Length: 229
Image (cartoon, rainbow, N blue to C red):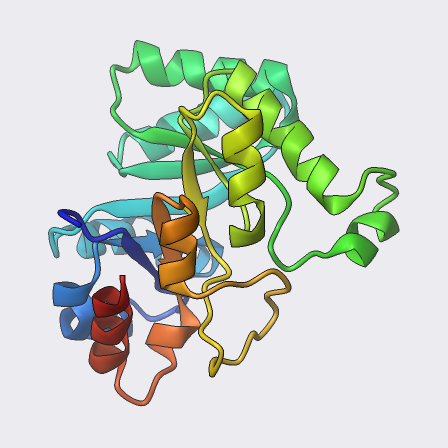
């Protein structure tokens, strides 16, 4: 493996803590994922401070709104030049197409990643939302919409990797959260797999948060996961 596929999810409201944590683990990760918790507390200024560390950034705000609003919000994200950013595929083809077009017109290299079904949901969870599809069928339906609309990749659980590889054009980059070893607490993740299993199944990028950030020794935890790949 020539490139570290681990993006560590830094879910904190304290930019100084985030910088100190990243400094401990930076030699064993390939990038940093910053989500809603970080953004709503630390804002663009905080993102720029993390960018100064020099690792690729994944801005994960899961944009989902009417097409015009979403593409305007996306333009602001593109100005920060992240490696990846996320859109909810369930926003529909018009929203996705508008976002792809604005990214291309901006000559941005940011990868647009579609969110399928959150890994905190299972079959019971999607039934509660009124969806008649099984979880697998819903994930695959959304993955095909992402593929049709020329997104660069999707977020999916490790359990859906093989199905998506078989049923889509295989050009989609698979961004995979829900990474847990057998000894880890699953927390709110319902569909999990170990890092090495996910990579061997076909994941391109692993999003790993609490197994690293909440470990007694985050540097050791990150190193062990990387060495397991």
